[in-house]
Image 1: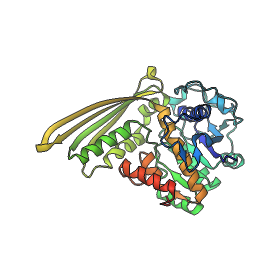
Image 2: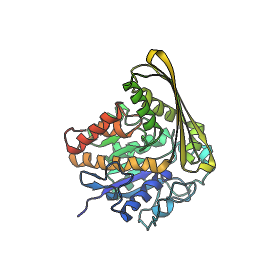
Image 3: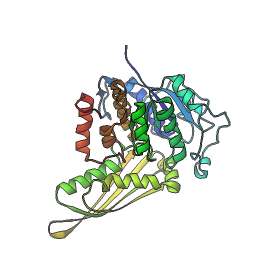
Image 4: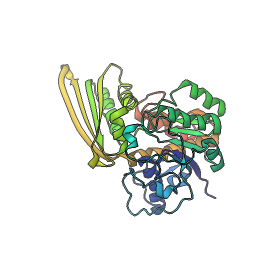
Length: 355
């Protein structure tokens, strides 16, 4: 009998659409391993991830089967070729909005008038082992509410896909150890996005003796995440900057920027600029550009996070999963170079290290 990884998702937006339909893509194409960092992790495939509960506040999503809700406006994630979603039997529940419904996002959907569910009860009744936080950036109250439901009440694993600092919070770390629940976060480092490229450039320059004086990264897309970042992107600026500057042994001036371009939909463009110095303090300048489907880039990382957390659950390891955090998130408790972090992840999978 194939064991499943039972997950719940808070926030049925583009990221949830990309993950849910991506799992179906690999079910339909079992021999296709393109886009997978780890086709199999400790016996688990991406297709072993099963969504058993979902929460949102959008009237066009709440009360609908997950297979329908993931396509409701304003979701506009890339549609994987040939995927035809069937009914899942998972009905999207009305979660509390707290600070997750700011005016600049409220214009995109109608707030559901259905009663707010008992999130902890839904988690317990569904058999969810992991709660994934995909709610909008800067929804700090709502993010902590869901973290409390998972870590303190339901006592299940918590993956924080957003930049609210939960996994880096010593209080949450302490409670997770006490309740023996694993944590991964904070903020997803996309599979091949702006952060991972910027980090690779910074690390290569450091290895080659190039001094990085200043740098910037500009990102733009047409999804609601970028509309939100225009208005309240402070925590995202923090996680993106520290993901790069945290690798450097000296101060680096760095700026980040976000722009909403509606016609881009879920396709994101990242532009990089680096001003540096090489031998003899001679000037060096680098500019580069990346285009990628934003939410698919996110989902490819979540697919690994869920399976790594399942290993921890089976091994009864609670607290911060340091290897997974360092390799897969922008703002882990400890920043280390990505090649070292990958080695730690592989050692975790093989059981050589505990977390």
